[in-house]
Amino acid sequence: MQADSSSMPPCRSPFWPPGLPAQIQVPRTSLAYNVEVAARRYPDKTAIRFFGNAISYASLHAQIGRMAGYLQQACGVAPGDRVLLFSQNCPQFIVAYYAILRAGAVVVPANPMWLTAELEHVVADSGAVAAFVAAELYARIAPLHGARLPHVIAHQYGDMLATADRADRADRTDAGVPAWLHERAPLPAGAPAGATLVPWTQADAAGLSPGPDEAGYDTLCMLAYTSGTTGHPKGCMHTHGTLMSAAVGSQRWRGALPDSVTLSVAPMFHLLGMQNGIHAPLYLGATIVLLPRWDRALAADLIERYQVTTWGAPPAMLVDFFSQPGIAGRDLSSLSYLGGGGAAMPDAVASMLEERFGLPYVEAYGLTESAAFLLSNPRHRPKRECLGIATFGVDARVIDPHTLAGLPRGELGEIVTHGAQIMLGYWRNPQADAEAFVEIDGKRFLRTGDLGFMDEEGYFFMRDRLKRMINASGFKVWPAEVENLLYGHPAIHEACVIAARDARRGETVKAVVALKPAARGTPEAGAEQIMAWCRERLAAYKVPRIVSFVDALPKSATGKIQWRALQEQEQAAPARPAD
Image (tube, rainbow, N blue to C red; front, side, top):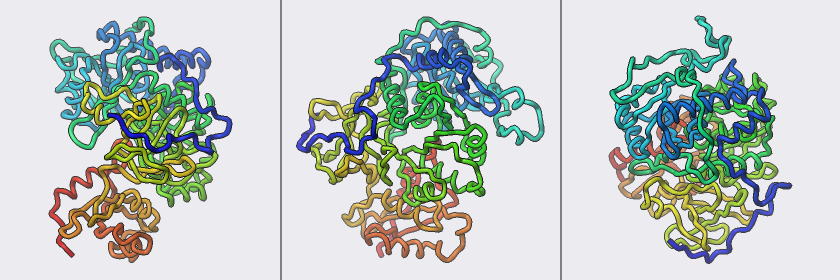
């Protein structure tokens, strides 16, 4: 589809980071080659820190090679074949991911929260021929194991713990290792007819070697399935080049070095955790400190113990981390970079981080379709509640979502982007491609579905998702704006704003909030009091007409508040009577 480009194409922001070029040179090699380079440069350096286990780059490279050899020789995986990866964060996730790449195959990361029906769609749609599966999750994929999914390699999380961590002791708290990591999930004695089920340790012990690494910059290497708003998830096709462009660009932008130590806790199946927690540090030859599941106290321990310097996390995770008891007394002095995206960081929380901990939060913006890194605030001049400016080689604009005409700065419209990190398209879904891409000035732009504007200094601000807008008596209300205000209320810990049906207004604004423990039952924390507080700070049509309370808001595996789940629950409820 051709769009009108009546607005001036954007130029580089005048606040571009000093010393950084407008374009960067991205290696024309595969992601797997990055580990080989790091292993040659820093063979004895720690690549992955998994509690007491320090896995060197030489060891990591060797493990990847053996598992790639097993895929090729024992499972018959050929270049271009798809291989499912179904696990929580662990060293085996990283080894398996890069073994799939080294075998010339395509990684299909699966959300560890998915149930069998969701896995069935992804296995069928991708045509996966093999899978790496955590033993604790095998039961969910077992119904698909066989003719549809012939080969499964299963791992136990505890097998990658150091010998001291694996010692049999009643109290493991002194090792800092969660007890669940020591649990060994049972596996069937055999595989279905015509299929194989092999323990990870057995596949590794086979000592098989892979053939030559023939993957390159343009080789398809990952299908990342989006959650979507309706229907089944769609597979985003990424190459070594799209992922490498985002990984290399993000580290140049942030000033990360091989000496960086990254806390990797955001789920690795998701692009935020994958890029920041795997691809970027391995490209640098940096160290990954791995936390399998979110645990705010344990995260603080790991930051102190291993002197973590860099942490990328969604705002909800940081809100939880910095609200834990005793956090002010923890040594967080090693942290030099704190950033993330996925949702707007409330201004009140960002102010607290800077004032109490001296940590400015650097907000960035990306999508599964853009390999995560797309827009970002410059470290030397960030703005609050802002997506940032277009990064290396990225052309980002704002268009009218209906006419597709370009819009001037300051005017609200849909953000569209063009850049080297944008996916090739959706896997075997030309209709979705036609809806997602638009041609402007001879270039292919991705329609993000996000409404925002660009200010006079080239910074982008998002108002909300196109499909999330609340229409209250003809007035447009953007939930993110109301949510950001609610985070400034002294009694509120978390907030989510959704549309509620209303007999007179059509839709009205509803706030679902979780209170801080100390505020529960206090006079200022009632529904009427919160609405009155909002009336003093918002236009009348934006003020929540309904406030409901929950102990905690539902969150996805990536730490995002699941507004869709709350919205669907609300839509199933009876309409609110007219006032």
